[in-house]
Image 1 (cartoon, rainbow, N blue to C red):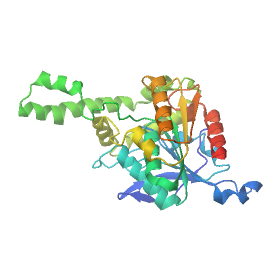
Image 2: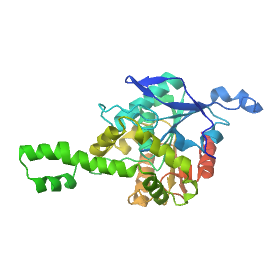
Image 3: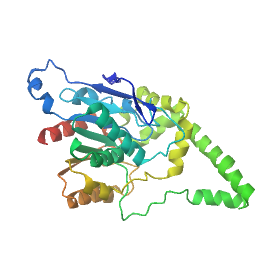
Image 4: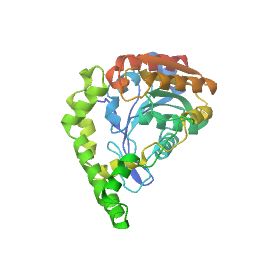
Length: 318
């Protein structure tokens, strides 16, 4: 399957910038669903870094059989606008999701997010309070209060500065010439189809779904005006710059489902990280369920049947 089976929504803007989203309603001819549809929450899907609504290609058709489903492109990604003057990070994307739920969905919403989108989903779910019907995290990014996070460029930049010296003119050369040039080279390399395929084959344990559709869905937005500037902003931020996960758990009032691709090569100290998520969620007295899946960083696209099954079962229980 290589189509979303969802239609683009009417135009919507955030901070004056165009935001792309899609949605699909349940099949109104499915009989029993009609009597309970109004009481069901809406589902909002939030992609990870470099991805888009296209990454939910195997989830929307299944989940939308019983629930109204939306998927959104975070500002700076996918088909959404890519302005260069924004402070990209967790706070920006959280506020975008909150605005979308309040302005477009206007119903209790379960937010499902992968990786960077997982952090944004959790932050938005916490901010929405009673308008949040639940949060599902798929290999979520984020940090905890007891972890030191340096949001400034680290040793790499300092080493290059030493090569050119520390005078004002050399600092100018580094900041406005050398560093942007290095970033440009990295960006151009990362958006080559062969590199995208190779990267995905490393983070998908089973590469079956690493197909041309997926590769093009990642490559195409990188050609948009402003894509490189967004990459620079995110690259320089070196972090999500939002609240730590444990504080967000304390703010969250809705049920939580943790889904982990337990062979994720991008997740450092995976078992310890998973334990931290579960432990802090329990300390926050959240109703939490955790499921480990034989998959990599993007289980919703690698093992969609399992993810869809777990999500639908959890939705029914909550």
